[in-house]
Amino acid sequence: MKTPPRLYPNAAAWAAAPKKRLLLFGMSGLGKTHVSNMLRAHGDWFHYSIDYRIGTRYMGELISDEFKREAMKVPKLRELLLTDSIYIASNITFNNLAPLSHYLGKPGDPAKGGLPMAEYAKRQEQHHAAERAALLDAPHFIDRAEEIYGYPHFVCDSGGSICEVVNPQDPDDPILTTLNAAMLLVWIEGSEDHAEELVRRFDRAPKPMCYRASFTETCWQDFLHENNTEAAKVDPDSFVRFAYRRAMAARRPAYRAMAENWGVTVSAEEVAAANTPDKFDALIGHALERG
Image 1 (cartoon, rainbow, N blue to C red):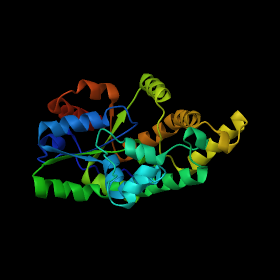
Image 2 (image 1 turned 45 degrees about the horizontal axis):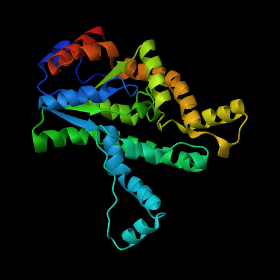
Image 3 (image 1 turned 30 degrees about the horizontal axis):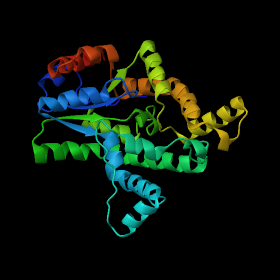
């Protein structure tokens, strides 16, 4: 495909830009939020978190309603809710996305906290719709951050599932076209060692993830077949561990295509070494020089 022009065509343009706008993408755990927090702490960067936007603006009511359903199962809490004596809401933050993860859930045995696959698939699609909307909101927040708060620079901290809602091979992809016009897309690429560490970390604390419907369905059917089990007997943690390993392999080429067609690449090692805003600024310049 013909590569769309980048917002900053080269390192010189980046260095001279009075307003720097970035979108960081890649697997969760490789430094997107860490870098975003570092830049925000510097004082002149606005940090826009896609997951936070999803969990507040687009899925906040769904999350709160789920909490209320659980509270209604407890007689005392039911009484307090029905008399408007208590208020239940999500306390989601940039660094604590547990309410969103809890709502997404995991499919499998209800006795182990699992959801029926139909409900799980419905929540996955809700997340996809929310993620598309949150990504398309980014240019508005660039303008808002400057107009209201005076921030010249902007960093978009995207979720690991960005590659599930775009087609990097389509030069007319509406989301990537919009993002590319407003920001420089930067892939934080992990090594094989990083991948193994992420898998080990996930195995210790498996959490809900969001994948394309076709990927989820294939993983689900393969898991049932390989384990000779029924849907209602699936251990939820076992399934999400199974799906995560496959997702690591599936997402890497998608991220690579996003970087090659729409942005630039930096390694996780480079990001770890760029431990100040000035060093990270220089790293982006080097990435632009590499093409």
